[in-house]
Image 1 (cartoon, one colour):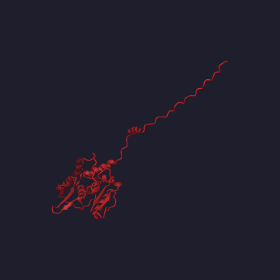
Image 2 (cartoon, helix red, strand yellow):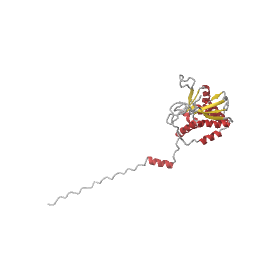
Image 3 (cartoon, rainbow, N blue to C red):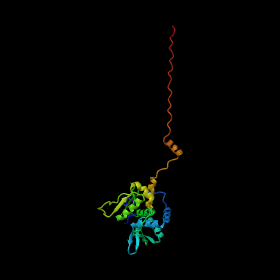
Image 4 (cartoon, rainbow, N blue to C red):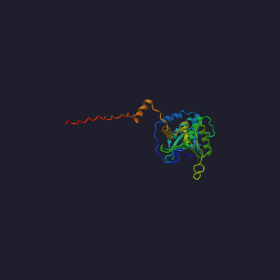
Length: 260
């Protein structure tokens, strides 16, 4: 199922209307590239196992293909394929704004992932390929994961639960539209847990998740010196009330009777 960047929508990959991506200074291409290089072989393999859920296998050439409108993520995948000693190449599909990475990498989908960091990497790759988030900070935030293979989605949900990320039930949005389409949401109480423990190596999704964290990061309290200064500006001290002096009642001079 090709979902990664795919359908137009307010969701990063599913529904809605496209909106400009917010900008933040937290993510740079150099920083993401460094993370990809630092990942060990097990973490790399686990991530690609998740990302290849979005791929199709070409029996004639014996290669996997992943299509995406954001070429930057495909270039990130190339770095990971190379770490496993596999060749890959990127080309444009026709005249559309769709790019394809094709690779000779062959991974065993039945391999077990026992360590939590492997489970986190697998979920990260799965999310980058099949996950959806809003494209604008104004929309209500959510994290959803979708797949045609329900058993595969149940395995992913179980991995997230072991990472301490609470998820909703797996359901079909519309049996009439597509009876074989399944999804689940990460519960709102676990959004921050997902961002911190799973995260993303997809440049655009990573940017959106980091923006979400920045918006909900608690502000550090001001030092007492600055806090008292700010409070004085907001609430200036009241001036003491002074009583106005009351005028004194002067005695009237006695009237004099003229002498006759």
